[in-house]
Length: 402
Image 1 (cartoon, rainbow, N blue to C red):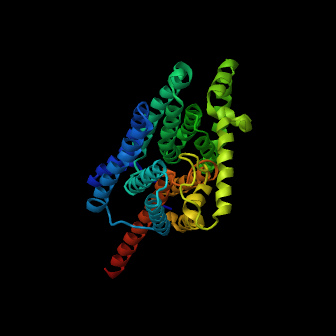
Image 2: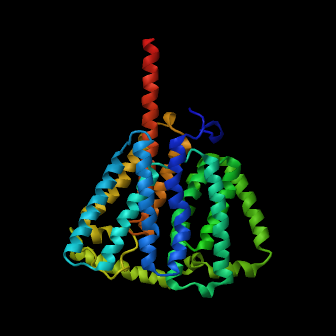
Image 3: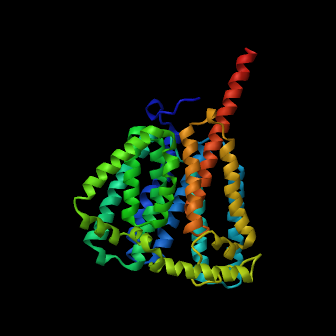
């Protein structure tokens, strides 16, 4: 079995250096630019926020892929996902031509751009450099922690409803990836602190769906640590409990302030009630149009917050295509030989796909941006394994001939 790749033994080349640019654009600039723009209006955020950065990152990624990187390698899940994007784009065009709601179609155009941007970024990301990503994530965590503490406990009256929605979703969107990557790729001694800080940060942000997805995948993240994981976990839980129980009122304040606390009484939560109403409307639309759906038949933003939103807008064929992306991703993951790839990278790709699927089931719309990233990342891992296998076979063949 190949040993894990160590960053300190690898030298950064031109491809590695330039490939960091689109990754940093998406994962560093987006949440803070979006927070800034949300203080103006949602319209500016859509035009110049994630959409604008996705275009810049896409151009950077294309440049890296075609001029500096290895030959592009497209797997079956990626090909199916790109076909899914094409179907989405065609339906948007038809919707525009027949006069569907302009705000909804504009949002969907922006979503396509974001999905393309995230996919292309995933094709250039260099997650082998563990220390670089750990440093980035710790820095990111520090900023987020300070921001969320200020948000909940110091200036909550300054946060508008629209701004609140954009801010926590923007940060949680890009936080989930580095949190997962670092927890899996870091040394064992750092894994538990990273998991603990990540869960705490998602709690403070108030991103309930990302919080649930991360919690549900923690056992898979730490599966290989067995006894070490459980012993250190017990130690951390005891230490954290002793520290927090010093002030019960502080715990109550944190739970009450966080949206996560509402999960304890979800049926009385306003967001949950609204989403159940939207889901009911979506089911009625599906029952009336079971094959083709009814694109943009809802008021802007009033879509089902789960994978059924694909059935409403793209019809049953769109939903099936999206589900097949995950089905083929499972097959691809199983087919990647551990001998020709860093097993930790393979593990990251599987966990990211698992998290995205959980998010689509419980809370996210069918054009959730991290879907594109997870599919592309898995494709990159498979491509690296295929290239390593080809190089190994070529070397073995040349050795026999000599």
